[in-house]
Image 1: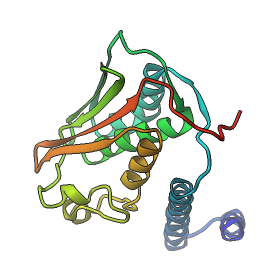
Image 2: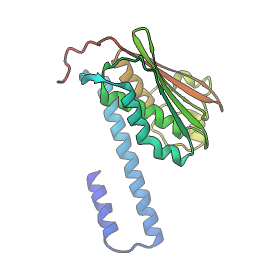
Image 3: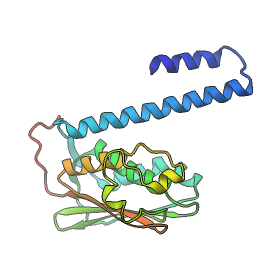
Length: 216
């Protein structure tokens, strides 16, 4: 893939291209980007299936949520989607793999924006429930049919409505998200209504989790 990318860069640097040549060069770059994204997803699936340790640190979920929202504000603005955040004050810090939980938040928030309607909204909240933290990501998007909801966390599954609307996706993001949450001792689920919106919930334990081979 690096070789292909390098060759495309060389072609682009050889001189002015006509409109047709530039069109196909852009298509090649777009195809390469999709391949890179898919390979990254497959590497994540390999990690989920492995016994690689979680890199546990003390995590402030409010900071992770704020960072995730900040990275996606441009995409939200492009679709005129409003993002609201509420993190309860009584939430303690927790032990977690910060990079992996950031990945969970990115997956859920980017989906909430991507599958939303123009002018819609996304709300992400975090609350304490006994010894767990509950995070909810709610959108006003296309929703998920009842028959499809049991399969949204299956690998390579894509809801027909998303395919019909030609919304790009690999069908791996939610499967990876579930794997990360379950490896942290939490759980994840969804409630949705077609053409109304979806809410994804996940929990993380606030008590320390065991990881015999934590990377320092």
